[in-house]
Amino acid sequence: MRTLESNLPLGDVIPNIASLLIRNAECYRDRLIFCEKRNGTYRGKTWGEFISSVKNIAGNLAELGFRPGDKMIVFSPNRMEMLELEMALMACGGISVPIFAYFHKETAELIIRHSDARFLAAAGTLQLSRIHPELDLKQVIVFDDVEDQRFSNLIPFSRIRDKKVSTVELQTGASPDTICLNMYTSGTMGVPKCVQLSHRNILSQQKALELLWSSSFHLNSDDRFLSYLPWHHSFGGIFERFNALYNGATIFLESGFGKDPVELLENWKQVKPTIFFSVPKVYQSLVELTKADSDAWAEFFHSGLKFVFTAAASLPSKISQEFEKRNIPVIEGWGLTETAPCCTLTDPNLKRENGLVGKPIPGVGIRLDDDGEIQVKGPNVMCGYYKNDEANRDIFTEDGWYRTGDVGALTENGLKLISRKDRIFKLTNGEKVIPGEMENLIQSKCHYIMHALVVGGGREFPVAILFPNKKALDKPSYEITPEEGCFCPRSVNELGKCLQGCLHDANCSLGQKFAKIKYAMIIDDELSIEGNTLTPSMKIIPNKVMEAYKVQIENMYDSEESRSEEVYLIRLNTENNVHRIKTDA
Image 1 (tube, rainbow, N blue to C red):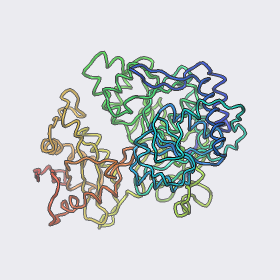
Image 2 (image 1 turned 120 degrees about the horizontal axis):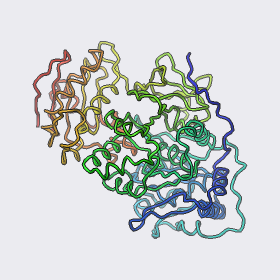
Image 3 (image 1 turned 180 degrees about the vertical axis):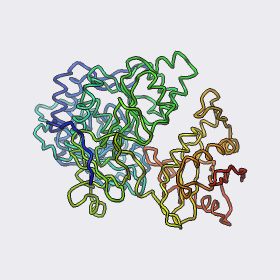
């Protein structure tokens, strides 16, 4: 079995989070660690101020009965208090358990109970309203200055942050293998699993990045990260956040949390980030927004921008080219929460290839099973799932490699991703279809499609259900088009007509005739976290979407059931001849 490994040895790794924080407080005492926007201006704390807060928190938690090995749920969006608390928890031997800040009551309580956490920190009134006061919690801490008479054990965060303690020792002697972070997966294929991560898992990755990037980018305390990726998720909470902390850089919290391109661009102009981590749709929105304004265009692609990092999906080639024209490298990576999260990175000196996610980082090995499943071994691989014997039973091979559930191929330039293993389905003729190939083709060709899902397990042919980008339809861009000559639709009907050629081209791009979609249906609806069709990290949940739109899918297979939503049905000829489009509304 062929194994792919980095030719760079990992070397010594900082043993634990406490040691990292103390090292940085000494090296960067007067440098800013984190800034938030207040009254239109970014203000923040220095490393010296930050370490004092961390020590106060650790000491006061001990007085409240918090002991090494104890867990605390952190139920909050990104903010200074969350950063202070999580670092204090990890540095004093505790385990931080961050969860999505806007979970509904049922999900939040389910995870709280599963976690066995006895302590909880909530952002404010909204989060407190979604917690039952009779949960078995020893102490509830609230970041905002609010009161809730339902909780007799509620204390303000300011009390444990600002109250001086006489003596406190952070756990600089903690074993690197001590668990310090429990992170719940996004749950794209079912119930979220609780991933147990150690100091070594997190810090070995940062050492690997230091080795890879020191010669090219020289990350240091002068760097500025404009950050919106949520910390309950591994991409933001581990990869981006600890990359900034490890190098003494400053994190500037993006006040719109990545949801409003206009606000993000205004923050970009103020901060002038040197590093930016994001997902393709945000890059696409920013590039489109700046193209109409030459000054904004120049400020966005400013000379101090060292590189941009993209994950979750490949960056569309036209967006990537805008960075490359200005010698701003675009780096992609691959990994999972279970691998803390990064396993591979692309080489910024090589031309980007669609689907290629690069070579293993130092210390990490990758190999493929007989069925193409990617297996990983290294110091970044989790300690196992918490309270989940079924999931743990087969997740590691007999010789200790982690089974990722992703299918890929090893190429000369590194790993190429193909699909999630559990998304590959068989048709009635026994042929295997990889739905991600068509989904990626559709979304890369049309930014008026927000989500695409290809299904067809146990059927004669695949079909696709498509969900429009309603914001783009409301304000179609006549300046920007993903393909030359692309029509800019203003409604679902116009989008259906517009998509005829794009879907035909996507079908033509697939080599296997059996993998071509025969029908595509545009559904005038939006997937959402609230509807349980999107994860908190905005990934589609295939099983839930198939369940929610079962009638629409059945209609594409000539079901007699009636359509309950406004839809636009597109019939395609898999012989590559375009057929007339049929409208149902």
